[in-house]
Image 1 (cartoon, one colour):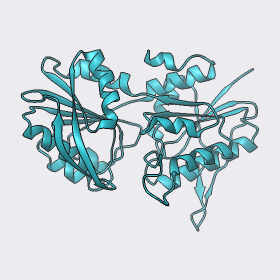
Image 2 (cartoon, rainbow, N blue to C red):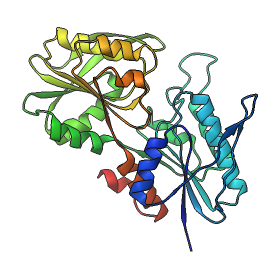
Image 3 (cartoon, helix red, strand yellow):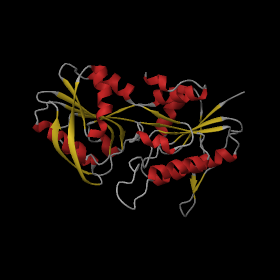
Image 4 (cartoon, rainbow, N blue to C red):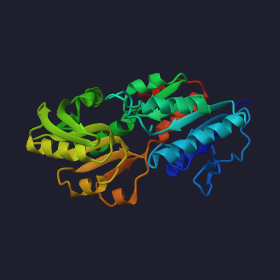
Length: 314
């Protein structure tokens, strides 16, 4: 008889507990410990022989520690004769390094894909990949789950739609914004952005009309918030009224908290719980966190039952 086992890493215990409640499946503590020199050790105390195991571990900061922890848990489960091992990685670390942007640079997201596969993962479930082509780096089944249903419900329930325009922060995000615009029956605009270095961007112009409009910026992640603050300033200069931001992954590397706190142009920043929010970010008073536990739980349940995952978004 097939059985499901849910294992939680240390990176996002709150999300793991919520998923456990939705699935009505107890969490297994992998007993993660560290030796004096920093090496990671884990011991699975529950019998997983022949079980379908799902490991919930987001690869947020400290990215390398959480990634290594995930790999070690997968290896332990493989050696414990688990029938299948699905890595549920709400935020896929290294996803921005998906191509050779300049000579003699790595494609680190491909390296991470190889590591997960070699460690013994049978399948990967993640949320809102930075670049969709990362799915092609895997030779095992891969599901890219979208936070869009969670965001769409919040927009309909909490934001006045009568004077709304949806904005993409760059050309690459237009397709994402168009998905929302189609369902909300609203116009879209785009920010023409020039990136001058890692985590450094300069917003240059607005393509589309935002004058006297409330706007929603839709993105997949916020890191240092430099691009976000620059975008908000540009939108204000072009006559935008209220500015809301929706982003799946709140990476919020320093000085994101300071930038968001001091930015009077931003009315509200809405992110999901794929990455735990730090106390510093909570203190800004502008961050709203929506839970992805229900949609990830449905994806896990459907994967276990061999049902369609894509039908969640159709």
